[in-house]
Amino acid sequence: MSDPKNEGKNETYSVGEFASKTGVPIRTLHYYDEAGVLKPAKRPGSGHRLYTNQDIATLQQVLSLKFLGFSLEQIRQTLYHSGRTVSLSETLRLHRQALEARRAEIEASLQAVDRTLKVLDEEGEADSTLLLSLIRNIQLEKQQREWLEQQISLPPGSMLHSSTQEQLDKQFVQLVREIRRLTGRPFQDPETAKLVKDYMQLIHELVGREGALALTEIPQDEIDKLDGMFHSPYSEEEAAWMQGAIAYYAAEYGLILNGGGGSNE
Image 1 (cartoon, rainbow, N blue to C red):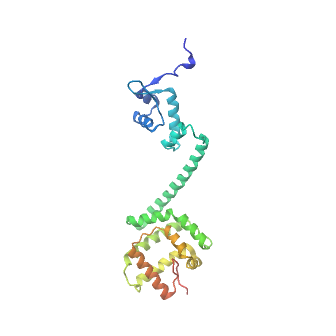
Image 2 (cartoon, one colour):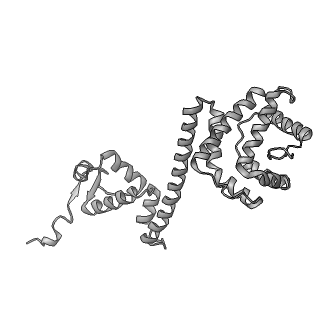
Image 3 (cartoon, rainbow, N blue to C red):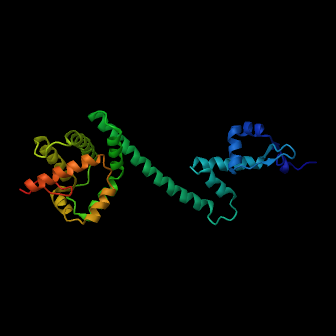
């Protein structure tokens, strides 16, 4: 007489039967086998895959870990690495931290996309260089702000609200377009003068007058660090022309250099 407790324990299934029983496609089962996360026995002689009820339990573990965002390599290590010293609970904790970091990245990316789309809605289409520069600088805002806070005392209430950020995004796009349009013009040109004034005003809105003055005292090696945190949309010619225009009006009217703004009247 057979033992009821052992009934079904030795039952085996072909890959087609196992796929039908679990609802997992045959192609996926083949892939899991090749990846080493679900390794069925092989039928002697033919080498065909032979699944058991234990493989059903293993498959559920694989699907659970995959749902949590584990890669197949991470799943293989978790299920079969006999020498591992980290428990599954600790692995889950570490994975949760990784997911939190990814969530922060995704939220930042969504914010960058939303702000860029809003600029496009209001300012019209822009070339890819300008758009990618805007997106990259939105992503780097936190680092840029932290650098500024380390270097200068920002004015009270200088942390930007979303409406202010969106306005500055528009101003950024407008300034880039104007710099491209005016590059090569004489520095004495009235439109060049207005462009430099607008540029300086934008700097003032970001860091305030005292902050702009403080920027002139920062060592060049620190300024270089900020340059590494800012994605420029300008060609070498455009950047050189704009630097020359700022230098011209600084010499003529006492405008603040090194990214500052305003006059010293």
